Figure 1 (cartoon, rainbow over the protein chains, first blue to last red):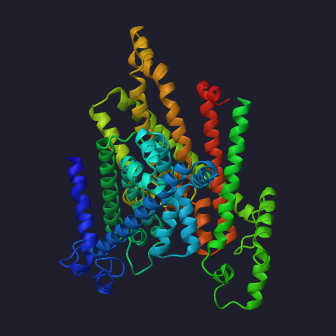
Figure 2: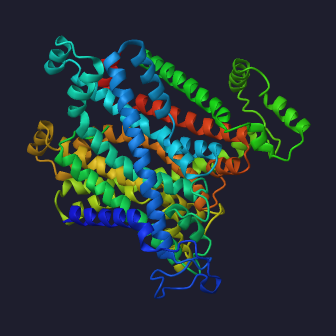
Figure 3: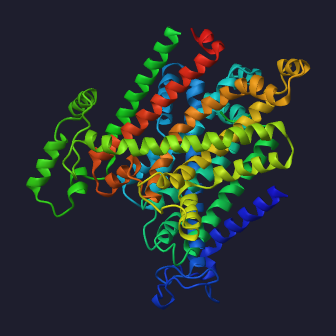
Length: 264
Length: 308
């Protein structure tokens, strides 16, 4: 029941984000007479401090969060898995170095490193993706490495080695399918973390730049008008929390379904 | 135990060294010329050269890194570009506020998570248990910058009980501490519930029950001790997240701590200050994690015996 509700919510989020250009939205239409006004026929959620329709900006923000989440988790998954599996397979000094580097990255509280990186690289959505990926690949690398180590001496892998298969083929055909389940679960929780990360960076003014919309920047702008127009904060806050909650619920369910051992 | 201590301190030192390499390289990641970014495009060439020399950016990279490490060894983090004061002084001024916030958030988290997790495990499947699970799921899904403004709306604007922002009097600490502590409370409660359920299935718990102890005595006297071990590890790991979360929480509540100093440094392109802040927060994180390992070993003899 709860899972179904979460799935429906995520489907709505996906459809709105993907279909945004087809909806004829006007997230940048400034109309000062409507400043901070309540709901109206062409703006069911009211208007923001520049008289822009909040619903349109919310959908536009959904697009931003989806774009960043898919890019960051996709890139982190590919980079982290490639590094983790290769490192475990090669062993020796390479593996030692990778473990050290991963340890150093883990010694940073993730969001702090992302804030520092985004701050130094300058604002913009591409730098947000870069900053969050720099932080995000580490978890996948560590997981992929640990999983590959546990498979390295399995008989089917040894058989492939004996048959003369090359390392890339073994990793892709004989290791990857067996470590996919935990990686997918990790990626699902990763989506939730990245949505929060993007909104957090945009809240600090380090993400998308005006007039583009992000849930984080809408909340940040809204905090200035909380006394007169609390809907500017409450609406994006609820949207963001619901999507993150739905992703987390789905991740929990996926973890149970795929029987992945509790993450460390 | 001494061997264990030495190995942990050594590994923490190596990690801190790696962290400082990463922080050092941050300023070299600036797209284009960092000096131009700091001074703006209209700056005079002479001013640029002066700043470049002051920051040591005109020297070869290994020399820069060498003097950076020497500075660190003397606890010298350089000079802030904006206020022209030593970075160490600026950080020292802001550190107490962040420490106060972190400790308060930790207290909130433990005060909520301990009873909630324990009661949920003792009454598995009950309404209370389901409520605890709902709280745990909700708590990790609501980010600080969402919870903070919502709490301000409810308790400052609507009810008028607590101040909106700033750091004056005990009341101003309440909302930031709840904002920062909620996620941790959720994670801890969930962990305590699941480990407690696991421990309650052990033989020695059955023995304790067979002796005729009351359920409260069984849980408090026998089960909780062992169930706390993973919770303490998690607490140590999450303390870093807490420190990082403090950055955003401090911005929400205009709390004058390290977090708002970090964001100010970013906004003013004050890179030496930014590097200092990041280094201090990360080093605090490493220190807390190592301390957690030690506490864990002290509590559980199996760990220090296995490793030494």
